[in-house]
Length: 442
Image (cartoon, rainbow, N blue to C red; front, side, top):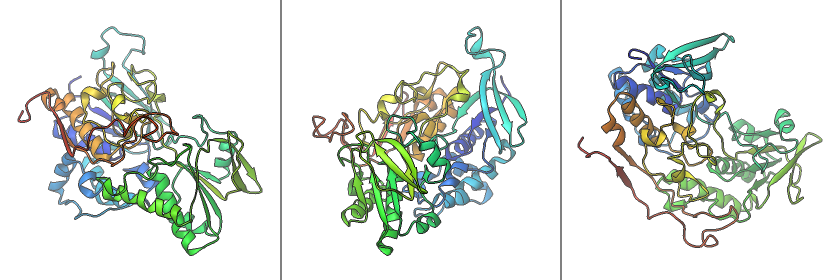
């Protein structure tokens, strides 16, 4: 397979970084992006400000690729998703040139001449990328390896409490009164004086609550209901001042303040069973029969899940709970811990029985939350080294991990850390972790 390119699925932050690392290793990347530009998923939340500062958002190999083109890293600060694209992702995509194919959706990955059942000489057969362009024209590309950095953004979890859409949820989404994205500033302003329901407990939910609370301060008739599935508040507000990413900790502080100020009504233990449309508004009904007042909009930000449909012919080794690579899953399983940190990892932890195939970035986390861009950059650095045959570099993983300041331990979703039997499962915060199966100087 010498001379064949390496397929990269997705031109988001990790996909473009993978392209830079591959080029640096002398391998030719071929990046497939379903959207019409770099960072297409980021663009859908371009109005949201990131909580990672610039040093955590720039991949080192990408910076080295861009430097000869006169690019310099931004001075600092916390920018929006749109600014991330314009200041970094778009220049990086331009640096990769026509290696990035926009408007091209991957619909299948296979081995040349072999379906999933055939084992004979499987690892020696090249991969086949089956794709379709914006006009509906199907095509195939022969590649030596596949890095799937397609993310999870297009696969939001439903509002329904049992993992499937609640009764009536699809109809409400089609009617435009239920959304899976944080509202834009224009949408937020239009909701003044109305009732908005936010479902979810992560950083996207906090962001939505904070933006809506700002409107409620100016328009006192605005009502905001924040729905949590868990029966107790617990660590909903994150680590606050203990978070090693200050802007991330500030989200929890500000959202808690909105609740304390009476701008937001917190509803706990509410597991959505049914979504009713009533006179142009939407009503959520819980499994225990509780009913919320009619809302003008439901913002369901309950996490994401990976799209594995186009990998049906690949031999994957995925955790049955998280749908993440089985070696990585124990480190990120929220049923076990919720520290928001993960041990440094690379090609070894991301490998599958299908040699040459790697899931990286958000997709590598399956359904687990708390993914950071810097984690993905370290992933693709290690994977590119492995594909280039530099196994020492692939095994040497070094990463600075900012702790969330939250460690609630395992147990039921309704339990606090104390209920679960202690202060949590996680060790004391570690600022810099280094795992090397070879000497650090190698």
